[in-house]
Amino acid sequence: MLSLTIGRRPAYAVLLLVPVLAAGCGTGAPPTAAGPTAATSSPAAAATPTATTPGPDTADQPAPTATPTRARLPHVFPVRAKKVAYHPTHSAYPGTDIFADCGEPFVAVTDGTIGEVSRRDRYDKQGPQGPYNGGLSVSVIGDDGVRYYGSHLTEVAEGIDPGVRIRAGQQLGTVGRTGNANNVCHLHFGISPPCLGEDGWWIRRGVVWPAPYLDSWRKGGNRAPAAEVTAWHQRHGCPEEPKRR
Image (cartoon, rainbow, N blue to C red; front, side):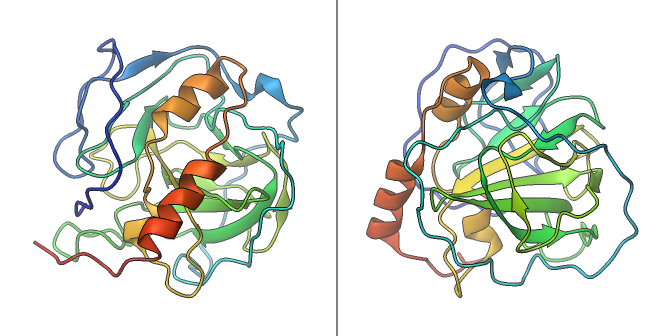
């Protein structure tokens, strides 16, 4: 995936639990051990994992309009699993790879509305690197105005379509290895502003470092990224696609 150097890299003591990915997805440091499921800080409406028939790909459609409507939203860890680990950094742009077994539930971080959905894996090693790297993916436009994105899914849960209302902890899909996941089961997780009308993969993949928020959520905390995302958006707007290498 192409690099967009944004934000700062937080420093964390980490424990090497899983291999670092090869160049396709890219990581910048060993993973941090994460505790058992962190979706316990809020009631969850977990859907039963359901295989879906490939349908229209909506990843390139603009997300629904989202403006902050609630101040103290619940936030939960995006993967519900007993064994998870994640990197505090990810290559040269802000994002995190959360390692868990394929098939583990990927859940909504907070209350909001489904934004972009991709039910088809269009990644091709010989094709453009960047637009389709995530494979199957889902984003949520939180009621806090923040977009939360998860990719490399095995499947997208039934009924998860753009514009659908969801709650914190509700299942969106399952951890997988589609796209450029290099055959390693994990969830690429990114936090960004919606950038309606000017959206692209280079923003959706993540613009602020998720690790400080993941650290809080997995311990049952409720640290919110809205202020940092808003500040980034005010500084950068919705930047154009970076030049390809």
